[in-house]
Image 1: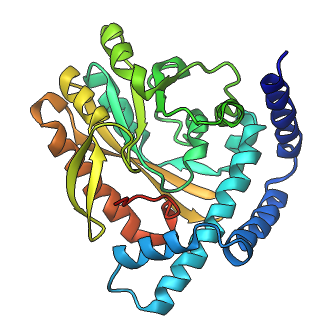
Image 2: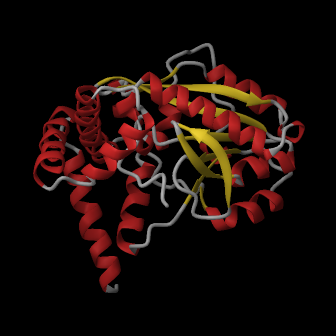
Length: 301
């Protein structure tokens, strides 16, 4: 066992032990971390302030400061929930009702009527909870389309190999043997090779593009560049495309809603799909401004 593997085991083991504590304890720790990031180390405070101010020029300064404070509080919650989630099983997650899917039927209908599905998510709500998606249905009249094997999550590997492995384990939560992660540079080859099988591909495509860029136009009052990978692949293979909205209802409670963008992506251009995605994303952010990852350097020069 090399040093990297030892570090992974130590960090993962520690997080696993801590995760067993009640969610209320994690929220207490999250509040402390939130205060520390905002008021002591000023973690990316200038980035957060600039992003919110430029996105909402109509906001008064007091409203900007209020949104900034709410964002840091929510960022602490995200960290707390992520650690708690990493050591939770199906029963614990389902019983907590930390997240509910409001319209699973939209996902099921799309799954049944198309060769595969592309789900375009964002960094709204708590994206770290996506691994528990099979526990979030409380409507007994609707069943999931298949086993967890049909879901593929597209991700970008972290630069630090230790934290990449630690976060990968933590994001699986109750799915200890889940093998559905696909790196961005491998998704095209994978989808084409398995085009005869039906999958649900989940992308998070709202951050600054790390591959080929295209002009989105005006998004949150700023000229924006985005990624076309997921939309382009859906267009090529005629998939259904859904937008995943994740509303923060209150502390410890989220709602996931699947909003159809198109039933057959080959009938829209990738640019049109992307434009609709950013329209829906902006609507969601304006509904709850603190609920997005404002600390990301989204609009780089």
